[in-house]
Length: 297
Image (cartoon, rainbow, N blue to C red):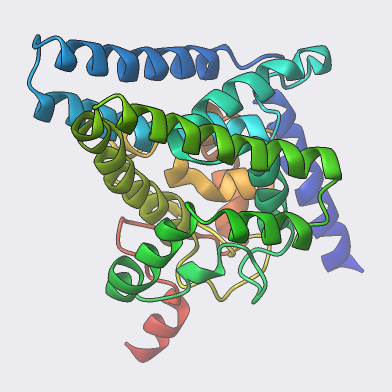
């Protein structure tokens, strides 16, 4: 009974800290979204008008693709509107715009991602394809995942598996059709090279880095399912900015309503409690079973 009371009390404290770190409206995410969308459009415009080299524009757009998933991710959790429920249209709008660049579709990704939160690291976790070693993930599993983005049948089947409503399924499929039509129109107008260098190649690289750092790294080795160890904390110099807060991915899984830019503050506030629960606080290289390593030494 004492252990149970202590656990309940700890969770109550965690929720209290979480509430203090949850804003009424996430303006930094709005600014991030508008800045990234503007950067992408600006890079394309400048490259096509000869103001900057295509390579420079491609590099900018790769960074944009990597970073703009944070906007989609926050939107599917309704973390932009946050406590202002009447402004959830902002989440739908910015999430859908980010989805165009990412070749992801808001309703589908929201349903899929919320399942990931419910069954993190279980065998039927939507992200369980990342259960692999680094090289096996990068060179075997990740390419298959990336290619599946362009498979409309796979998208439709997944919508059915998720038991999405007819309207949400139709919106997801319509999004795929719009993206496909956009690509075909660009090619038909004679801009295939621009499409490849300014969107598709940056997409492949940026999405690969994002999936490595947001899906593989935080959960590796995708075996533990407990509240305090199904994800980890990555601390490294400059990591909070480079990873857009995802070095503290544990905080997101514990309290998904906290925005990305307050993960670190929440972690710092809770660190003594989390250390008592044996959370994984590591560097950039995962060490999924430090207790076993300690015994071996």
